[in-house]
Length: 374
Image (cartoon, rainbow, N blue to C red; front, side, top):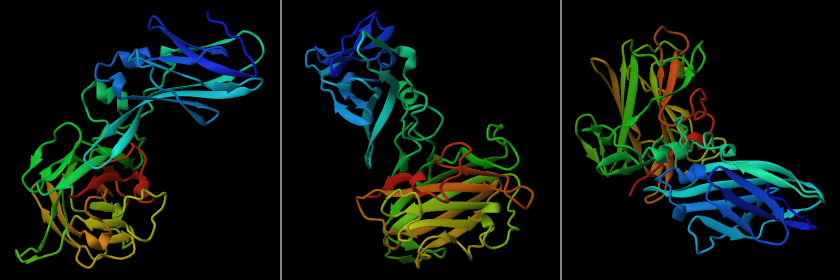
C-alpha cells in the first residue's frame, strides 16, 4: 500500500497498479500522475489522444495536461486542503462532434470523499469503482462507453441533420424512406397507462419519422408557394385506430402525433413563449387545434393525414422563419406518438428522444433532440 505525507496543502497522485487498481495518494512533494484507467484501456475504440481528464476538488476544476512522453499519462499539480474533508471527482470524457454541434461525452467517472489529516493515508481508486453505466447522452439505455465500444453513435437519439436529401442520424444507418430520407425510430416508451415502465412493449405499435428541408411549400393539389420550411413525415403502425374521442385540450389522450420545436435551441427548463412549440395532430386528420403550446400557430403551417392499411401517416410543413429557425444554427426538435386503443386515457406514449418512463418534452424543451438545416 502506498503511503502519504501531508503538509498544509497536499497534492494528489494517481498511479496504475498492473491494470487492477488505481490508487490515489496524497503527497506534498510531487505532481499528480494520472494513468489511463483500465476500464477505458479495454475499449479499442477509445483513444487516449481524444480523451479529456477533468479533476474537481470540492467542485473546483483542476486542469491536468499530458506528460508528453507517454500518451496514456497525465501529470500536474492538484491541491487538496489539509485538515478537512474534501470531495475529489475524477472524470474521463471525449469530445464527440456531429453535423450540427459538439458534445463533451463523459465515459467514466469516480468520486471519493477524502479526509486529509496529519498521518499517513492512501485512497484506492479501483477499476470497478468507475461509473460508466449512468452516462448516457441520448437516453437510449446504453452508456456512452458501451455504444462507442459497439461502434454505435452515443448520440443517435440526440442529433439529426436536415438537408435536401433528408434527415439522417449520426449513428447506425436506419432504413431509407422514399418520402424524406433516413427514418428515425420513435421507439422509447415514456408513458404506459396502468403498468410499470418496464413492461414488454406492445407488439401492435411501431412508428418512425423523417424530415427534410424544402425551399417551398406544396399543398395537396400540388400548388407551390416560395416559403422555406421543414417537411416532417411520421408513419405509425397501429392495429386499433383512429380513436379520437377526447375533448379539446386533452387530444394527447387520443391516437395522435406531437411535434416539438425549439427555434433557437435554447433548451430551457420551461417553454419560453417566444419560439418553443408543441403541436398535436390527430390520427383522423382533424387539426382544428394543432397548437398545444407556443406563442401562436404559424400562419403557413399545414398538415395532412393519410390512413393506411396498417395505421396512418402524417405530413407536416413547418415554416422556418415563423418558428424562429435560422440557417446554419441548431434548433430543438422531438417527435412523439400517443396510442389509444380503447377510448378514455391514452394507453402509451412513445418518443424519438427521451428516457424510458419519463415524459418530459411537453414541459421542458431541454428534453428535445437537436437538428440543423443548411
